[in-house]
Image (cartoon, one colour):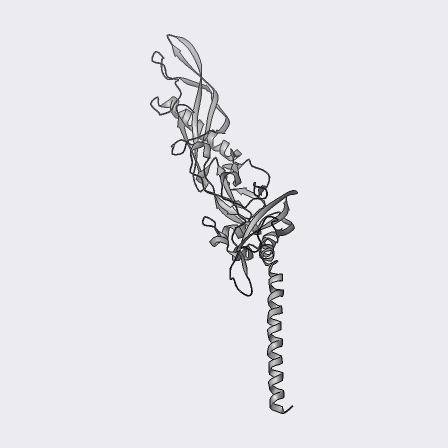
Length: 337
């Protein structure tokens, strides 16, 4: 065989071998790509499990959900005290693996409770080599309500989040979207008010085996209640003493107890000051000018002289505490609670 014919034979053989490799490669790639939907979801949920919010956000399912803030979700996840523990990731048994959208089932545990969620993946680039992307964000809507919404915010994990007033009082509600986890919830407090809430916040989907959805049944809701601090009791006691003294000195002072009698000989005398025994939260409808923090000072006693005889009576003082967004407090007195 001459040299030219030998070169031609070698070239044809090389092309045939290359074609065989390509054909063989297609078969191998299609076999491997049956795992690609699972691997796409696995990469996503593993990022959540290790607390890497930036990597989870980078998956960008559905434009990271229309109502979600990626910075809030990532910061909260970084401060979670517990994250999901993966048990298994597999194509859902009812899924059509030849379709362009496939459901993948994720089994996991959180707070020692087993759960599962189905996440869809979509074929992103149909062709010789398939690539898949997650299209369901594993995000759970969370609403934090507060009896003192004027304080504005609370902290979940390492993220500052807005709070709303109570839904039962007609306040508009607002949700943040977080990855599943167990989070410390810290209320905004001040010198005068502190939160009574204790314990972590478990954020998890309530729809076992379903896709995560932004629905009321899948929303995690919690509320922050407040109580008065010793400093607030001191402030209210001082302001009440000043108010009562003014009431006995000047009958026309607003919101005074009824201690002045038309037949009295002179002004009434205060025999014992009322005591502020409790500062309590009351339900206050949205839009009301009333403060939810209210108090009464009880046990006040007074006396006066009428027709040469000494008479006595008891009185009560009512008031409200107005807390500002900065946490300061002012006291105003009212005719009733």
